[in-house]
Image 1 (cartoon, rainbow, N blue to C red):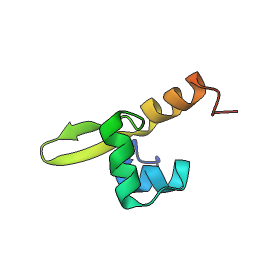
Image 2 (image 1 turned 120 degrees about the horizontal axis):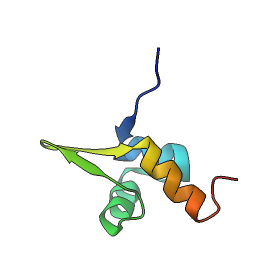
Image 3 (image 1 turned 45 degrees about the vertical axis):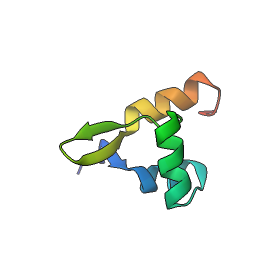
Length: 60
């Protein structure tokens, strides 16, 4: 089974930055966590998040 290519904002905040729900949404609002909107859902593309981390040296 393939891993999911997107995750929720709280999942991404928790797994990648150890943030709570509100802090995760605030980081997404600032653009620190990349998001896409699918209908009413706000999702985080895993590839985009990992690329962003690599660009700032966080993927090491």
